Image (cartoon, rainbow, N blue to C red; front, side, top):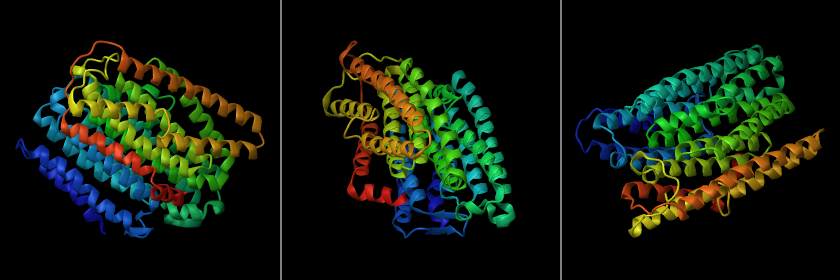
Length: 471
């Protein structure tokens, strides 16, 4: 397995995106399936596997995230085939989307597989810049404005990450020299870092940058506004793929920070994420359209993933991550049908479906809506059981057990608000409003079926054993 084989499908996609043939979009969709081939091969190789010396190294965590992301990419490109049936989109915008999706995917590969902090940042920056142009494929003033907003806030976020990386590198340079940029060496020598305070400062600054990119406090509405202004496949890419690259960076940095000073890391991240969920829970309660609702829910779930990870439950965090990566893009892609002619209608959104395709569509969307609030047998139900169990174990071992238990109860109260809101929305979608006939197309239905099968695959004993082995 070499780097060229991993990048080749994206390079082919980039080249084909310049063809003006009407059938090119079908070839482009097929190319997204080809991306899965080398990733499956990489997934089956013994780990760790050096792809490019010590700079790009595939381990179990990397390949799991990359495999999940590639499946999401397939679902998004399938839904793109019928995008023009739901919204006004020109052939030029189609080609432009695929062109920058190819660049985005190249950046993602470098970012996820990187064992070097500098390469991780370069890949993240490449993915960030390419998404600016994907937002602008929707030729409206709102999308143009939000593309600029994304570029400005995204630039601030990646600048914070870069500054944090510089500080972390400086803290370990006296003992590792130029190799202080490598994740594996930093992890192996974390307890020997001569300037732990400098490393912690760098980690905190980089973490704030990553949290901003994921829509955490204080930028809770930033991502929701961008996804509302974009075409729904762009929102699906944000929630299912871009956030994957960001959270992998957090996993890598936090593994090192846990060895430097676990108590400082836990308090900082725990307080930050609970503050984020506190704000997001009330924003979800007031959400008036599907795109903002799903976007804000994504912020809540990313915060839970982070909490579970730092609470010593990597299995719960990774299971929750996989479930979220499949569920949220599926819900975003379904908005093409749910929002008739671009008009938001919550009441009756799950009514008016005829035939086998329509019945299967509303059934799958109903399952996804109920699964996202962790009703069994959703993978999120099991991940939250393990995650909250780990949080209680951490609370028992801390010097402030009552405060920790109180914070956990407060978190559960906030999640109950979100649960209530989603149940109320589902009831309104299914049992209220006028029944208007809606059309479901085969390609977008196939995308939802892929996500449903992927969700079920997460609960296979072999999948669960693999995730446990990562932790």
